Length: 460
Image 1 (tube, rainbow, N blue to C red):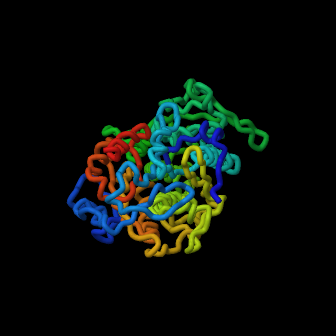
Image 2: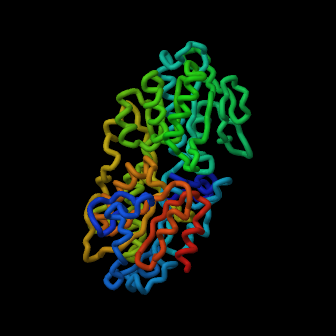
Image 3: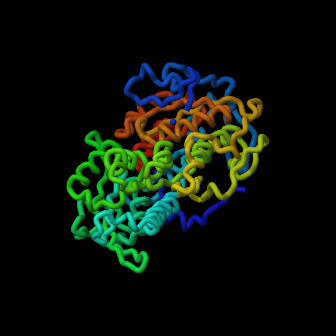
């Protein structure tokens, strides 16, 4: 059965942020919107409409199940299955969930991961590393453990959670309006910044000061956030100004973390910590990358498409998730949780360090417990429109999308993958001009506030 969290708990702390195959070919790369001619072969802008005549859509898709209903051509777009993924509809300032978007229809869900559990894991991982390696951490011997922090997007709930997780674990957190302040501080080599404070760690009978030396949102000149190149430039600036004081590099994701690692910290033996367990970051642990967090992208990608599959088939939404399907696909309750009131599935996180990184070297490997092919007679082919907010996003393009592409065949889904520019919602919505040719939708917004940009199209 689905594992349900207490709504009161998650509603207060979780507002998650945290790509497919057309019929045109085998190359299923997302269309980045810059060359519509390429369109990833499989992301078929030129494919034409789906065969609505033989695609059976789900009926009301209620969680209690039911028989498959009319063909997709007879189902209004506003009534078709919809999954928000990776970026949970929410207020980017307060984190309050957008329940209008999450309850758009009775076949609407969110799939992401437990942002706060993962953020706490990342902070604890950094703290544990410092304590276990204190003899080589304080590089200049001044008794101050200095760290710099790459912030992905100041308005993104996942980014906010990860910044808070680092600061809480290292004792540098300062409260603001009842929560840990997640604002970037610029430069703070003298410890005077108001958004953070100096923390302390007692290690081996000695007290060390912990200081956030610098932090900034990694946003490029075009407006794209989580920008790896910006992070590489930032570490160059920081290291030239106060490099001897930097003992730890922390990042809200591996894309930015690896950029800083390759640009400076690898050559200077400064441990760097990221998030996402991208393949290159996991491999870099053998070269001194301190660690990362797996957000169980394999489970998230499966859930993203499985929820749509179940809604399309008109079966209990828990089929193949918490309850085994006829093929034997099922997830255990130690890898995901479901919050019924939020209509949200959250994958759980795992710390990846030098102790276990060899178990995570292939980030695009299908999760074995849900790897069995569905019967096409009972789950016939359906067409799904799915977008990734930024075709250049390292995690989504190199990890999440390949996983989706592995699962879409197993689940008998024909997915058209659309890649955005990471800057404007219209770059994506402009390519949803005829939603009637699809049976279901999976949406990854540029900004978590902008769910209405998509639901307005489906309401037409």
